[in-house]
Image (cartoon, rainbow, N blue to C red; front, side, top):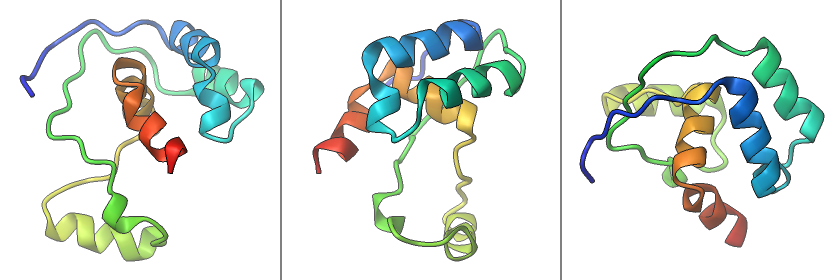
Length: 101
């Protein structure tokens, strides 16, 4: 996949979009929790780039203490909440694949 730089919507707009798509239910969180992240989460950035994003299916069921060393060994880092939200907003099928299993 090609790397593309795109301006990000404000966190409040992202929260509204996640809720409108029903992705908050698929992720097991409430509308209030999504809105709280938008209200208290990191401030907006003009541009953000992620590449070679991997959901980490091979780490499913691992604790953070178990997963972090494996990620570090692979020269990777976990997604932040904001990164995950941006990814799902741009590629909803990333979360849909989890919910279908």
